[in-house]
Image 1 (tube, rainbow, N blue to C red):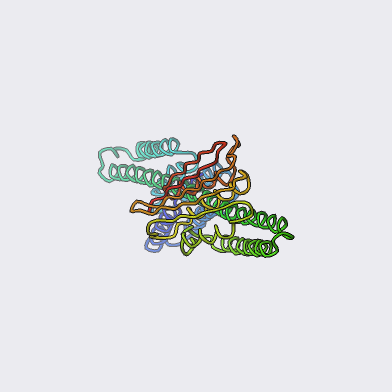
Image 2 (image 1 turned 45 degrees about the horizontal axis):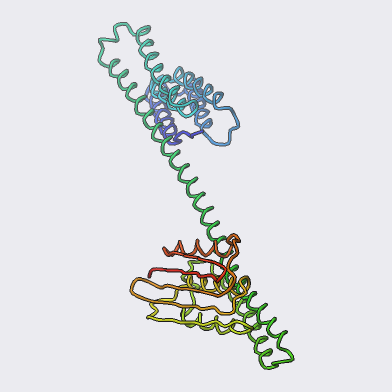
Length: 361
């Protein structure tokens, strides 16, 4: 439920209390009536304090009764201005329609009171002025209430939107982190498995080659640990964790995967303007799938730089995807490339698989 603007009622209470006490000081003096007037006005102010667990209708009825009692005890007559609070508070308690109806009712009641107790008031300027000023006050407080309600609703919508944005940002960051861990850790675990298989197969036939495979597996394990730590530590934009140079990083990647019954080649042409992590992750995904699933013996990685951007192509002579659905890695790669305004083209058959990724500068 919208909350009323607290300072409006507080200002009116303060003005009426000051005026009533001033009138008593220069006129009839302080008496029991003035004391009761002061106490009831303070009770009205207390009702506006927060923390009351009372139904809105009950609070509104108490306010209306206290307003009538204050007006009856106020010898100065200034308390009549407090009746503009009835439509104002009713607007918040029961809605715009009830607030407007209460405002119109207060104006009609004031006119009726003048008719009953002030003969000929309709031709006396001071009473007509009082009625018009009261009606104008009702209009102003209703307009203020409407603005306050709209402002509070807008604030609530903004808070809801900000909460949704925060949730979406957190979800996006979680997805990015999960994608980073999958791409880096998954690739390196595959590389470790490949190198350990090579080491096991060539232990007796080629001890040097077996030792080199173990060394490569150790490198992949250390690299995986470093990348996971970097992904967890650097919860910022992807650009912050890009490799120092894409060409250098790809050469290092190919070097530690080459061998073990498969040949991996790398061909880079053009001038690299800036490192692109998305292409590095695409190469990791393509090489991981080729080494793990396709049974390929020949894998080629080509990178082309030009004025428009960079293009990566990973091809192999394996058995293809075999109609299998894309896994988390390829799905995450498509999302990553889309965020970089790039494109992904994956083609697979029994004669091999080709992964092409294009990213603009």
